[in-house]
Length: 254
Image (cartoon, rainbow, N blue to C red; front, side):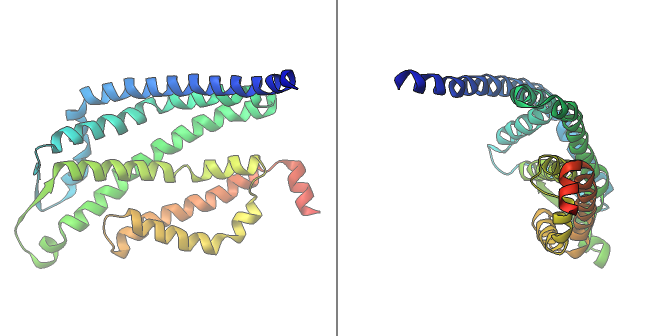
């Protein structure tokens, strides 16, 4: 009995050891990426100020607490390092799950990882070049443009950088929805019929999510996020239809 138990526990211990190694390498890549982001944090701050160039109201980034610059630098290093090390972290995840996949699953797994990375970068680019240049002027120029009031907006540096990073990360993850739908359909967890039947509930959830994410409660900014999210949901339905295995689709039709 003892020998059988030991043999049964051996594969589990091997998987745990493999998981420990992959987590160790992933954290190592994250630390290296964070070090790179730390060294370039000044340029990253300039990069994140780009949406402010679209505002008409004069604005200043100011520090109000002694520790603001330090915590902001750590935040930039952490999130910037995560973005820089994301391809290497995804590779470690692939090395962990690949031995348990069939050959047919391995063929589409690598393209899905590449598409997931591309979708994340597309989401951050959409936020940086489309959403924020429209959202920030609406908020900062609200009184100046509407009432012709002249004043200067002073923004807390740490809070501003934190908000910009959170928006970029949120949009990047939101653009993963179609890829996630394809993978879940491929695994047989969801189908395009099921996602289609959830459409009315998805609209409500996406509107609530957009209201939470957007920096202001105004409907304009909320719709600027909700509409792309809904388009991504519809794209997810299409990819789920493509990703559903033929055998499973035939069984559902019968």
